[in-house]
Length: 93
Length: 393
Image 1 (tube, helix red, strand yellow):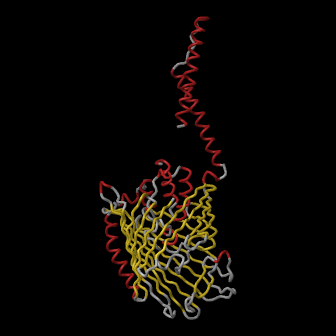
Image 2 (cartoon, chains in turn brown, red; image 1 turned 135 degrees about the vertical axis):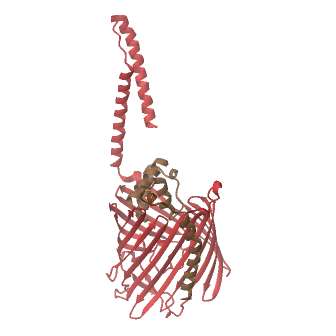
Image 3 (spheres, chains in turn red, green; image 1 turned 90 degrees about the vertical axis):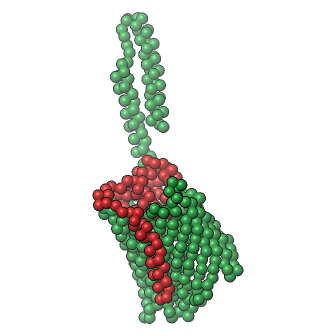
């Protein structure tokens, strides 16, 4: 139980340091919330959620198609986002 | 490039044709005085016709390509790791691993994925996952085979060494943890965007766990979740995870697992249930890319008297951004993780650990990690230094 309290305290301490900084950098207007998100933005948001994002030039079109299907499934990325990201990667590689 | 070549060829052909026409024109003019030449409009029409023909040819070539066997969409990827650990107790060792991942996109809606794991330390090769995936529609994908446990986020998403910010996995996860690393069965999963928010879900049915023995402690049963394709008791385990992202930078998830572990004889050994909570907040901030993760698990094994394990971790990582100088190659990480055994277990240790790490990124998928960890086991502290190089390829 003691360790649970430690986890709680450490979580709160780390959250105290991290979350305000993130939330401050992410304020958006209501209009922005409903606007379609560009491929480059989605690529950074979705890929960077788990790992450093690979540059578009890292793979060719055919390889990106395979990787996007793999990542769409692994990270439960909405299909519409995956489609936009793939289009961006294919246009920028 | 092809278009340029074809257009050049077209122009060349037209030029030669034009030259021939001019020669013929001079000859004809000499013979019957009838002018014969191509006007600019006619030349444009011919060129347009050529382009249309080649466009059609390109289109047909693409169609043919799409019917070819999937060799074009086969990809070998994965990651490799080399680790050196030095403990204050005097032990030190090199270790390493190689995990190739095979991806084969057979059609737009079918993918086969497999990850093998070869570890120098353990000296064996195993299949981390082998799965056939079928995309039913935009919101649902079905997977069958051996798949990474979707409970929480660490096991499924952060376990590859080039993604994990520290050289080690949290105490409750990994191969010696209390949660399944992989499951054998079927899963249905997907994601839905609703404006700026997202929902993600995974549900699965898998071979039931087996009680695989008591490693030196009669009160501390161990479970084999993967069961090597065998389900002795025929009691399938069920579970899943649901996650909500109110905005792009935060993901909140809850997971559950319920199974009836069987003894090697096939008899039911009790009820095993597992619940997890996870939260991840990751985004670019004015000071750099900041990640905050927390995950907690509690597992109960009920044989009449209930035994409960618990564990969790909290971690934050910052990769500074120096403004015009761009993103730093350095990244700092701090993690606290812990594991707690049932109170009835004689060796009921409560290991907890602080780890501080400094990473140096060579590129977006190659990293050198230096970490200092302080492991507290029942009041005794063990300090270690770990150096790890990890490459995703």
